[in-house]
Amino acid sequence: DIVLTQSPGTLSLSPGERATLSCRASQSVSSSYLAWYQQRPGQAPRLLIYGASSRATGIPDRFRGSGSGTDFTLTINKLEPEDFAVYYCHQYFTSPWTFGQGTKVEIK
Amino acid sequence: EVQLVQSGAEVIKPGESLKISCKGSGYSFSSYWIGWVRQMPGKGLEWMGIIYPGDSDTKYSPSFQGQVTISADKSISTAYLQWSSLKASDTAVYYCATGGYCSGGSCYHFFDYWGQGTLVTVSS
Image (tube, rainbow over all chains, first blue to last red; front, side, top):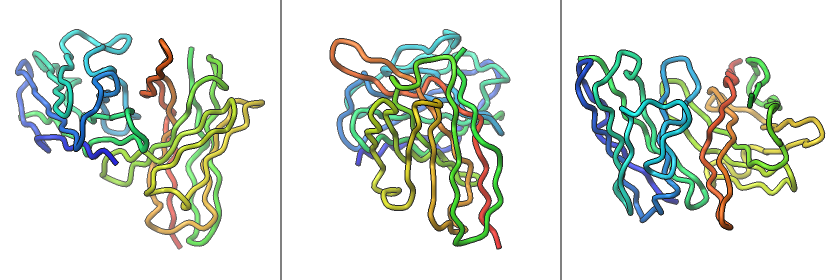
């Protein structure tokens, strides 16, 4: 199985700051097969990024995905209050598809 | 509008069986893989398995193989997740999800659309 390790576990930032979230895969993942989701408390996850860097419909351009191989990054520029949530990366390259353990972005 | 509507919350005793559902609408249900994701209380997302309703081809995570059964009835656009004997450790929210696309002979199965989740509580 491909293990996705996200870091840091928790990121404490203030509104307006930039968040940089990392997702490292235990083996190479084609960049076409890496997604990021946001989950707010009590809600279902929401797709942010697919194909490592393509924003899903309706996702603001302050969300940017990048990376290739085993290292992927989600950058959130100028954090808005609604961005404080948990973020998960997801690989759909090799079955079983897997999720990272999540990074919580909290208000400092 | 694509929608996945899941069945309601369940409170079940250990050892009992259960089948929860996920009804799709607003898209061609038979043509998109639909997956199930577990989220235990206060924990992250776990990919359980996925089914292609068109031919019922199913893939399971090794962690869930033999523990659950995923099925679908394309005639009523509904996918199912079932257990034959629940344990307290099965207490969780279970989400169904679908989406992605195929292009140039390759398919990309990320999850655009999610159900609202079904809370399953296993307690005596």
